[in-house]
Image 1 (cartoon, one colour):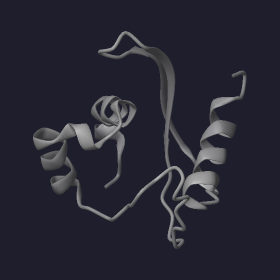
Image 2: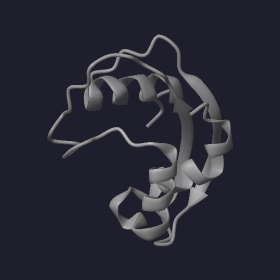
Image 3: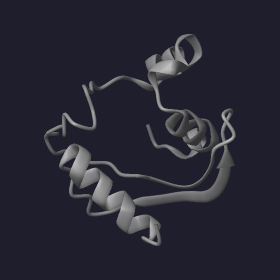
Image 4: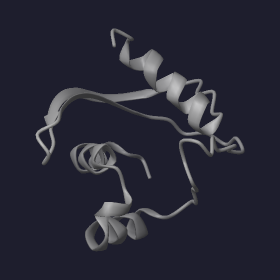
Length: 99
């Protein structure tokens, strides 16, 4: 859409989780092709925050904190509960996360 990746990431954090990230950590950008043939430019960032989350219920049904070992198990046993974009991005960049 022409919007710079970091600006889009900040907008999504604010719109979906009401997080105002002071620092976004850039992990990479690549063109991904998904199993349905969809091609998508993906820019991956992460941030660490200590704010309370307020979900945008029109975008996200629910959220809960989990440990990395539980996330790895959930991704292995039932990856369909995650968006294909999250799964691809997590697999590509998980070694860079500090948690």
